[in-house]
Structures are given as C-alpha cells and as structure tokens.
Length: 195
View (cartoon, rainbow, N blue to C red):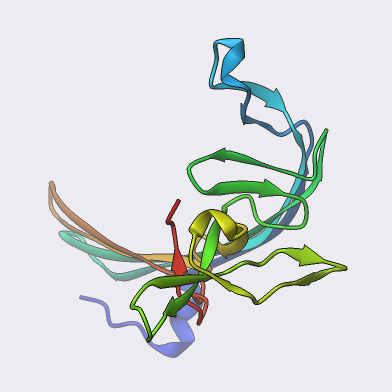
C-alpha cells in the first residue's frame, strides 16, 4: 500500500474546470395552439436562449497497488439560462404552469400569489397582481381567476454535484455514487396553483 504525501499530489490528483457561455438560436420547443386546429401544440422555432455556467471535476487515485485500487471522483456543475428573444410574442405557456418569457429562465413557473386566509370568513385570498404603469397591484381578491399568474420560481437547481468511489480488487470492481443538488431559494410569499 502506498501512502500519498503532499509532495506527491501531482501524481494522483487531477482537476478539470470548464466555464462556458453559449447562445442557442432557433430554440425548438412545443408551442400551444388553439385546439380548433385539431392539435394541442406544435413544435416551433421560438427564439434565442443563453446558457452560462461551469463544470468542476476532481479525480483522485487514493490507493494503487498490484491487487487493490481505490479511485474517487467529485463533480460539481452550475448552469443558468435566460430566454433572450422570442419570435412572435413576449411570452407563452408551454403547458401546466411553465412559461417561456423573455428575460426569464426557461424553467420558470407562473403561479397566482397566495395572500393568506381572510380571518373574518376563513376564505383564501390572492393578490390580483394586475400590472399598471409597470407596478403590480397588491389588491386582495377571493376568486383565483381574478388574480394574474406571474413568474415566480426557476425549477432548475443552482448547483448539482456528485461523489463517486470505485474499488478494484484483482478482477472485481465495486462502484457507488451519490448525487445532490442545491435548489433555488424559494419565495418567502406562499404560492398557489389554484385555477
């Protein structure tokens, strides 16, 4: 068994870091159409999107001898995307609560903003969020249909990562991997999907 010392780090440790920015043109996505056409949606080139992020990978050979080898891998990635331009409208829904809107992430959801329960009658309330002169109204309404759905959250994780280990003894291999992700911070205001 070989014990690695600090001066030997360059022998068994490999670090790779990649940073990228990429623009996608003619972004192909499903676009909802009027059901009178006989279709619920069509595939269309809707616009442009930019992805920026990084990837970090650290590989190490912890033990390496004739009969036994132990290697480890750590990976971490971060990606952020933004819709730069849409072909015909500033936004549209791709189904359920997902919205494609200029200036927002492709994974943005649109929800009505929940304003709590009216203590006098116990009914749920919503902020109307009707926009006028660039300002959204904070008027409380009871009917969710009177509340405008607004972009709220990005569904993609801020950072994703994994740690893996591989053990080899003669002709036998044992591998295991653990993955995790850090999700975006959620809004402090409760959200609702009421229709």
